[in-house]
Length: 393
Image (cartoon, rainbow, N blue to C red; front, side, top):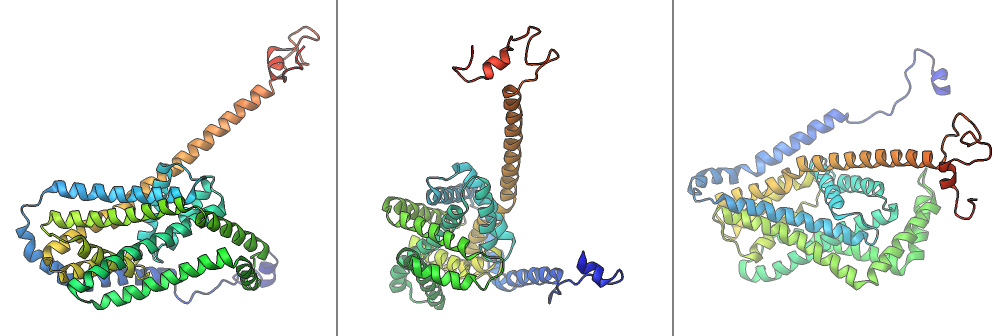
């Protein structure tokens, strides 16, 4: 108010000037997406048009099976979330819906998995998960899952290179994998063996950031370090998390294999894991939401390099991406609505139950006053029931 008064009635309040307007950013993003789709995919789409007439033997049951395997992959990821949040994890079906909404947001907004992680954190804290537990669980889930993917990719790569030769994309993916593993290893060592050093470093860093309390950051670091030590000292929990992360990736790759098989492409598991791992590792670079265009191009080009027909590779990958990328968007919206409606219903029920409990605990005195039934000194039935045992005459 003081600033507005000082500026005068004719002056507009000072607003922060944006270098690029928001609508221009959105337009540029849409243009980039269409550029990637139009430049990257047309060669393979032309090949698909030439060969698609040869796929009349397509059995749609394979397509249904591929979609079912993809759903199983999402269920495995929900089980991974449940494992890293144990013992305070919400119910599995709720975690499945939270993950679906996070996946939908990540497939719509740019920035990699950051937008999805943010909405997951908010929904988990609304589900009575402590903030530090939710943050640690999401970080462990994301980084640990990426580490497992890199392990599967490297294992398949070691078998594939002697059989199929070297691809320049392999080196780029390997560098990204090594960088990711180094960051993860450094964080583990810093938080488990150098907690004091991490605390001092973050205090110095946070002291220069406005509106952030160093004491709160120190408390958060300690809680995250404690959670990480619990995870490190519990090999069974770590083993279960690794198994579910591997199941998530392998089932997703299995869904791709089923779609390729439906279109007549017979791919060896090793070649499939190399193409799948390479595409998903390079999709980490947040060029487009969910690696749109990048995953399709890398998967199709790598599979055709392994001898898969271009039409079959394109049709299989695009059908897989239909259930892997596009379908989670509307289903994620439905999942979010169910979470919102369920939360409102729970709050309404709890509020009604609280009012009923209050009425039973504090009954009205009636027209005769004094909590009597017309006879002085005689307690009402409700007053007698509300009194604790031992105090009733």
